[in-house]
Length: 348
Image (cartoon, rainbow, N blue to C red; front, top):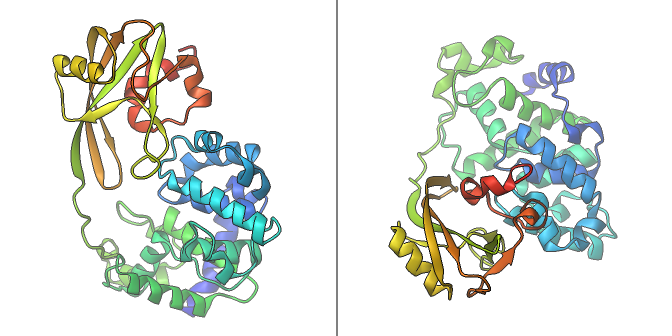
């Protein structure tokens, strides 16, 4: 494995992508980018990162920001617990570490939302500490290099990979080496199809490539099938206002605003009755058609209705808003974007 170090670093020096968080490396920027990149594509993160850093340039601003503004900045990235944990960690950083991320792998691991990978990435990239940062890209590269058929979903396999990487991190170049491994997995030794072995600096050292069976690796146990849930979504309208409600503080999409919805695939009459149970007097109902949204473990199959109700109806647990405030003021899950698209479009 030691033989991969120099060719990999040389390749990275020539081929590293120009990414916003690499242009100015600070512990805070590395931390924010790594949290955003969890479960999210690099291209999608670029714009979010710039907007987030522009609004919250350091731990002090992140610790103090109102939760609604924080979630609005995060809107569309999903996995909103990441944003909440960022703020919790920022408050610890302000209270315990004087407003600076701790330059210690062990202390980084104590921050809310920071696991072994993120701690390793921040420690190595921001502070130059010889700590591994093993994500799915790195596991894929290592499994192909060594033709290892161990299940990469097994935590013991990831721990073994961390030991392997720690043992070959070159002195003084931990950040570049970790990023090089991740970059190779993201752009060359990629998932979802055959890797670009003709562009790989490690092709001559790769056991899977030598055997011609690169796509046999990595081995990963099949995921459990998502649970499908039928939901009926109500776009409630009165006086040119829309009804939103706040989701519970815990659970799926915790604390975000949503269109009122309920289990099952109701017909028009059922949608009218559902509006009545909220204390409203429906005047007209129009079908909006089906929509689908996929979460990590759940898939929503939605049936939507626009329900116009009598003026001055409050409605239980509802907040009536001017649709023009949707884009700026209310953090909304993308699950409802199909029904809110006319209001979220420019000029809507």
